[in-house]
Amino acid sequence: MTTDLNTLLTALYVKIDDEIGGTRWMGRPPLLSDSELVCLAVAQALLGYHSEARWLRYANKHLSDMFPYLPQRPGYSKRLKSALPLLKRMIRELAMDSDFWTDTVWIADSTPVPCGMSRPTVQRSNTAGWSGYGYCASHSRFFWGLRLYLVCTPTGMPIMWALANPKIGEREVLAAMLEVDADLVAARNGILLITDKGFASKPFEKDLAEQGIELLRPSLKREKKRYGEPMLKKVRQLIESVNDTLKGQLDLEQHGGRTFEGVAARVTQRVLAMAAGIWHNNLIGTPVTRSLIAYDH
Image 1 (tube, rainbow, N blue to C red):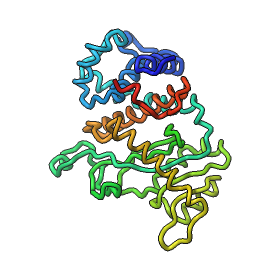
Image 2 (cartoon, one colour; image 1 turned 90 degrees about the vertical axis):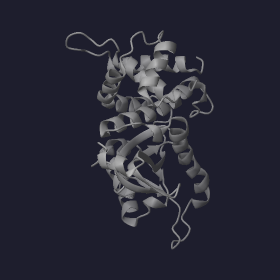
Image 3 (cartoon, helix red, strand yellow; image 1 turned 135 degrees about the horizontal axis):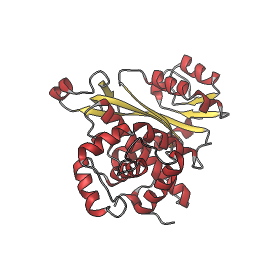
Image 4 (cartoon, rainbow, N blue to C red; image 1 turned 60 degrees about the vertical axis):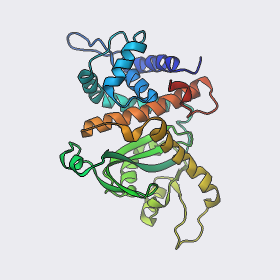
């Protein structure tokens, strides 16, 4: 197998079709199947098209051999939002089909997902009630939008993720994520969870220990040096590089969503694109599994 976009989309199409077993429809089936829709969404994210209208024009001209039928922009947008459960499911399926699924070293962090850059936008945005004001420490600025919480392996393969209002505490969101996927946590012995100082809390650390999870984080100024801290700086760079992949290569902050459903679908689209790239690189034995360079042109 070769490392290029066409090969990835072909392998992904076969994987999705096998998992969903074909789609049953009442009446006339759609001209663009669910498997084709997901592959089209992944290709859009990998090629860096923020505008759905520009993306469909490009796909009509250059990808007509792979997608004989392409809907108009309103139809594509509507199908993409309705396919959100399938997009989420495929992230998990790709992770389970990789060599990284049984990894017991997890890295957790959150990153801003801005949904508006001006006061008028905030006042009329359809994400009001979900989005809120938060602070991005890495850029020393406030933002209005959501936070993406990602728990992944050191290779960047997503294990669990969530979108939350930035006013909700990081520990509270992560605890809820682990509670929702309690079966997944229980199936692993000796999970090492690596986080930053924002997750520091003795009650939180105690709750994690009861679930069989050891927390590795930097020590606070008032604390003694914690066990394993010398190696932590190198490992912490992994999650920063994962966030950089989502923002730098997959344009997470340029998602273009105007409703909560739209934001959720577009963020999921980008997480799935990263998972698909890692999955395919692992499948064909590429040394750097999170490299997406071969698929972005």
